[in-house]
Structures are given as structure tokens and as C-alpha cells.
Length: 463
Image (cartoon, rainbow, N blue to C red):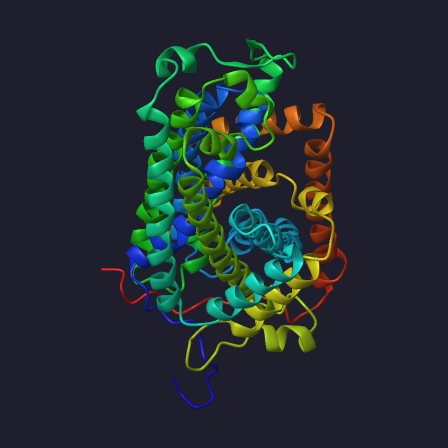
């Protein structure tokens, strides 16, 4: 690097490090204690079937991420991928969406950490604790990517221990047969009894199950920092999904099998925590709550890492006015990280901690279905135009696989829109933000001459 060359992201992380950070973003504990817990509340024991179907769908979606991430091993994630395959209008839709949803996800996760800690220390003040978590996470995420891979790996050990303990507690004292319960799902009827899960409820619960495993695609954000990213992308993505499956499904199944009263479990607002407090001593339940807090904190680091890199990549392309793009595209000389973009993301999360929780949930929405459908279209178009020809990971079952993903996502989106409450609102908000991003490109960026995708140096570790 000459003295005139600005610092760039460093290709210094192993594929294993990329896998660990990707798995951290997926966060199995969030999948069990938040997402799957909500599915249990919605649909009782259908959570087992919904989880298994979500994993099968994930195998197809991971193929999308692997092929596209290998074709474009850049820091921009979906922003870069969709811009290069479907056009900048779609890419900017994702970019502007990320500007809002990443800080929201950071704030929501910080509140989740606080809630878990308050299970042990009720006197903790929620907002200051959440803000303190975001400050610490932002500082950590601004450090070297290798340091963060080590930190998240150590925290992951604690997270998996909490999940194993939950599964063991459930299966140690079973109250019903696993196979029979999975094949004949039941939920609360609202009057203390049980009823069969309606098909409409199954569809709505499917969206929650998909969210429980969402995050394995975040490997694409580290394409410029992993050695041999083109050839390693497929096992980073699929590996994160695989580990997520074996760490999420057993604890969830254990809770369903081990619950004394399935109707009461389904009626609970926090089924998994309710089960633990009923099935264990207070000390064990508190220990697991601390493990969950560590896990969510760990996921916050991954959110800051991916969000910061997405913002950095857009700024590097001059997606914003020069006065904004210039500082956000800087890389720290020592740490090799997009430190200003990362810290700005954290600052946004700090302010959002002051926003009511329901508003944050609605803003965050459930946009995963929209993104998955767009990525499926990107694979189909990339194959037709040759824009993804450099990929070293071809999705199986093409074009049937992408079509299955599109149809499945459309059915989940339709179920969400047909429902009442925050689910429909969240989807509409997510779609609206994507439209705003597309309009921003059409009305502002398209008429400028300084916007162009930055092409990072080719990976020297391809062989």
C-alpha cells in the first residue's frame, strides 16, 4: 500500500472465524428464547414442525446466499448483490432499509439483554443498561475483525451451554411423546384446554420459525475479510445454518416434551422462561437467564459488525453526499475496521433505546421474506445474464430451488398481510422503507456521476 492509498478492509480472517461470527448473528439463543418462544405462544407444539420446515427452507436459502456471496465477496451484502443483479433500485432499497433496521435491531437486542438480566437482578434500570450495552458493543465492533471472531467464539461457548441445559431439562422428565406431539400439534383453546392448530395459525407461525433461523446469510458481509472467501462462502453459510439447527431444535423440542401443561405453556407470553422456572430451581433458571443475556449481547456484536460494513460499503460507493460518504468510508489504520460507520450505527441504536418497544418492533418488521424472495430472483437473473459467473458455489436444484423459495415467501407474506396486528404493520413498514430506498436512487443518486460500486482487490487466497 502506497502512502497515497487509503486503508482498506484486511483479508485476514479464517473461514472458521467467519463461520463463528455468522453463527453469532444467527444467535441460537434468540432463536429459542425469543423467536421460538413466540411461535409456541402462537401455535403450541406446532413449533416443532414449523422449525423443521424452516430448516428445510433454510437449506435452499443458504444456497442463494452462498452462490451470490461467492460471486460478489464484498462488504456490502445484499446492497451490493441486488445492485449488481437486479439493478441499483433494488440495492438502494436494501441499503436504506438497513440504515434504519440495523440500529433498531441493536436497540431491540439491548432491551433483550436487559430483560434477561432483570430476571436475576430486578432492580436494574432498563434504558441505562440497554444503552450501556450498546456503547460496549460499538467499541468492541470497531476493533479488528479477528479480535471480534475470538470474542464472539468465547461467548458462543456460554450460549451453547445454556441451550444444552435447556434441552436436557426438558427431555429428562418427559410428559408426552415427541413424535406424536409433532405429528398432531395442539395449542391452547383460550379456556384452559387444548385444540388442534388451525392451518392459518400454522402459516403465521411459519414466519416466526423462519426468523428463528435467520442470520446465516450474514457471512456475505465478510467477503472482503475472509481468506479464500469465494470458495469458503458455501460452508460458512450452510455451516451456520447446520449448527443453528442442532442448537435450536433440541431445546425447543425439550420444552414441548417436558412441559407439564401444554395449554398453559402455549398461553404464556414467555413460554420457554416459564417452563424453566417451573422445571428447575431458581438458581438454575437464573444461570440460564444469564447465559441468554450473554448470547444476546454476543448477537449485538454481530449486528454491529454486519451493519457497520454495510453502511461502509454504501458510503465507499458514494451512495450519500460527499460530506457524509467520506468519513463513513474510512478504515482504521490499526484495526482495519470501518470504525466511523460502526460507531455511527451504535449511536443510532442509543437514541432508539428511548423509543417505545412496540414502535421498534413495528419498524423492524419481518422483512426476511421480502429479502429472501429478492435473492431468489437475483440468482435466477444472475445465471441468465452471467453476472454471477465468478461464483464458486452453485445453488442446487436451480431454477426449481429459487422458485420454491419465492413461492414460500409469498405465502408467508400473504399470511402476514391477512392477519391483524403488528405482523401486517411490520410487513407494510418494511415494504415502505424498501420503496423509499428505491425512490432515493431514482430521484437522487441516478442523476449524479460520482456513484459507482467499489471493486475490492481480488482475493489472493483463491487456491
